[in-house]
Amino acid sequence: MLALKNIAGTQEKVESTRNYSDVNSSLLFMPDITGFTRFVQQAEPRHSNHIISELLEVLIDSNHLGLEISELEGDAILFYKYEHVPSLASILVQARRMFENFHNHLKQYNASGICSCGAKNIPVDLSLKIIIHQGKFEFTKVKQYRKPHGFDLILTHKLLKNSIDEKEYILVTDGFNKEISSLNSHGFSGEDFLAGKTTYKDIGEISYQYLSLKPMLDRITKKGSDLPVCPMFVSR
Image 1 (cartoon, rainbow, N blue to C red):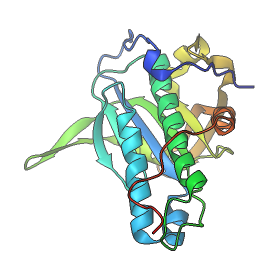
Image 2 (cartoon, rainbow, N blue to C red):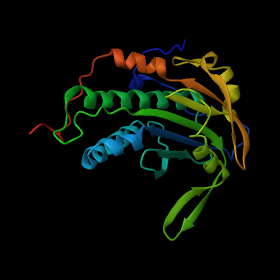
Image 3 (cartoon, one colour):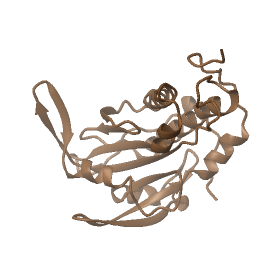
């Protein structure tokens, strides 16, 4: 059973740096909203666009580590920290904060009948998974635009499709194995991570460890929501 202590994210003090031998390593951190395509197909366009935009803003506002944004991809955000990798504990605290804020915001839509458009009776059945990868990349510059580029960015995107039989989870690649094995702080334990692997064409087998977020979601679901009704869509 996943042991997650109920600690307010804004009060947590986590060591956000660590010592690692490869000084050129960088962090890639990617939260991905699943169920996006189905929801957009079912909902009235202005309704779905408004909700997805707000949820992406919630994820960005939960970025207490100050990660840079590489790109917004409709239902996902690729964050990075170039040539610096915070401690795994601090990354997991940010992941938890994003997950909690994401689902607390969803409760606003499903509990209040927010919209008078044709989608008001469609449940907002969205979920969140988070990929955490340590790797290397450089930047491609085209005119005034500068974008991370390299194999590890491709791999991070590939990891969104994997063999994990869970709806919501945090996936952590092997560069963090030593930290996972000794992890026992801020409500996270290395014992709660499970081993997994997926084979990708042209890449081969990639192993990782993952943490189910279902226990955390159960705790969020049991709590009441005091979020206000969405001001953009109210019954008319």
